Length: 379
Image (cartoon, helix red, strand yellow):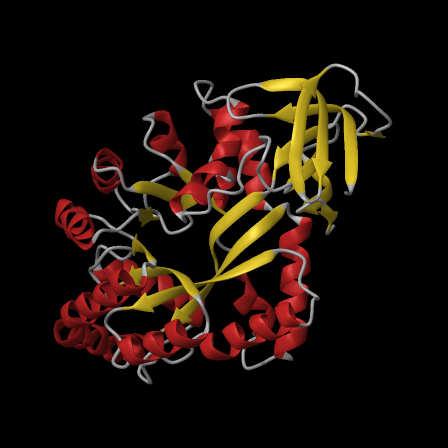
């Protein structure tokens, strides 16, 4: 039997923060208590101890594989560097969000999901990963071939989450064609003539593929018990479609109405932690803080900045006084774990996995000083 006691800590529990100690035995939380430790212990110096974060939607690994335009990095090195950053950010469970967008007209949009999924599996088998990794497929329903590629990955890679995406100009994230053009012109420097071709292609693909592809992906996910997410819902019709499909998570709804409707229907609303930290959406859509103020924000995702989860968890109670620190922490731990069906983690409670973070709040902002997964220090 292996046991370690951690004392002099501010433990962030489900409803309260207590000053006390945490006992870890054989990779599980064995005891939680107030006051002095019952036996020899490691002194946490009065720092916070939080449950390990559960990240459902981050595409950050793709930035490690493609660190510059037209540069592809060694995949194994990219995955291990990404994993190290994930762990150092306090994320002990991560759903690697891999783009499935096999459409030659969408140049640069296919994120090499088969390569990355296989490399994560290889790194895991080699015992070099710090966090626990699951596969999350972000499926572009307008792409010809998306169903076939997703099916192959579902068969070989143990997919746990699928999000249904549609980036057609005039849909969801890009409610107007002008918004789509502005975003991609700044991002890629494409000419108006190039954008004319892309807009026409995307709208044609939406008309031909979106409905049948979405139906087949939903059917496949249901058949394998895979959690479904709907991406960038904007209208009442989108919410109704998500309800009918059995969606569990509404990722980044772009309007207040879509967020309200999803939450009311029992679909957990996920927004980006960078949206909280920055004070708004970088694409001009609904602000996560406004959803938090109305009580319809359930989950935060680091999206493109792994360290944003910790910042947002501590910042949100300052921005929205009605939200306590335990409630904010639940948005990055207990709530995403529950949404993904992971009942063995996400909270500091006896019997659960000893996934936890030591956080100092003494500086200009919170900082993760150490991270443990199943009782083993990983960062």
